Length: 219
Image (cartoon, rainbow, N blue to C red):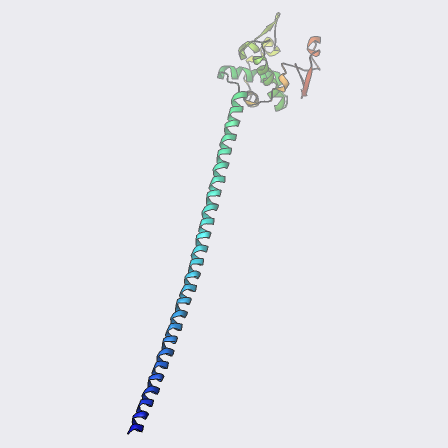
């Protein structure tokens, strides 16, 4: 009877030990699987974070590039605006405003004095008149300059011989317009003459600036 009891106890102990071992292995397996899942989850989250961060950096870089581009465009527009303002200011500085009547008179003088001359020569004749307008040695109006008398004669022969009364050509009108807006003042020339026909020795004594066509321009 005692032997039978001992056998039962031994079997019970073996069964208990086996059960505990199985439970431990199950727990270890569960814990390991759970750890793997947590580790995988952490790796996945890190990867997603990196992707999100990369996307944010790209977006940030794109926004920065757009801001720089907008700034450059704005600066270019501002520069063009300033350049335009400078050009307009220069035009105002060099532009001479006269009445339409005086403009027509100037064009008629150009027609009479520079008929047959190149366009540049026509502009130069008009420029001489405008230079006289600004010089304290001559009258301060276009009409006064063109109709000025020197002794018993007019300063410009077309006024003396009546050619000034003839209408101006299209080129003469255009030359007058160009001279009114040009900043090229022919180095402040206030005289011009044709050396082939000029008889005045005084005019030939003036400092020559340039020659255009048949005319010598001097000051």
